[in-house]
Image 1 (cartoon, rainbow, N blue to C red):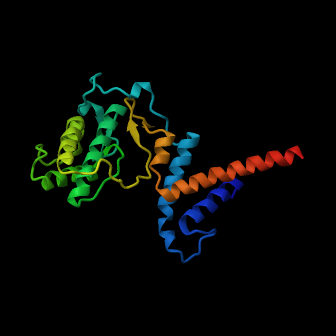
Image 2: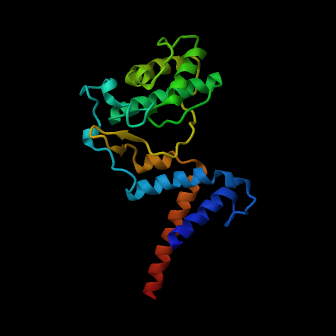
Image 3: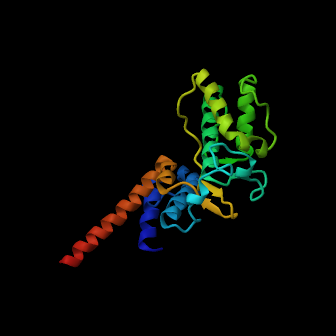
Length: 231
């Protein structure tokens, strides 16, 4: 294990169980996969080795305007999941997911990750919100991602209006997703659509502590190393 890896592991242990190394009986050990996955995402984004970043050509929807359609989603790369092919469509889906979580918080439903993917969890969240609202969302139940994704721009406004009407909080905590937020570009490549700060912002508190600790440790080593060389 290299020096940087050792520092990172120490900070992970401290975030998990308050000491390093963690006792083998620590109940915090059950969170190890999530911590390692989310930290891996952050540092992967940091050094740019995960996937290419979305560029200027990946922003506008197929229509060239502000509205989206089925042409703005790829439903074949991951069967059963509609992935946005541009940042505009992605943001509409994320907004829909945020509004569904607002409804869920009031109606006692499960919240979903805000990952911009229209898959089984987002479809289920829509259908549950539709039922809980007594049909007030007005678009019926959805059976596939292609029923839901192309109308995310309209549906997010519909759900927001309903969420406001029932006094839902403006923001609701969402489950953390260890996967980077991505799109499937026009050339079929998966690209990261969220920057490093967004990735850091989605880390749970323990992982943020570990990340800050790692950078603090690296900064300390660099600083003390320079002082030694000056002597």
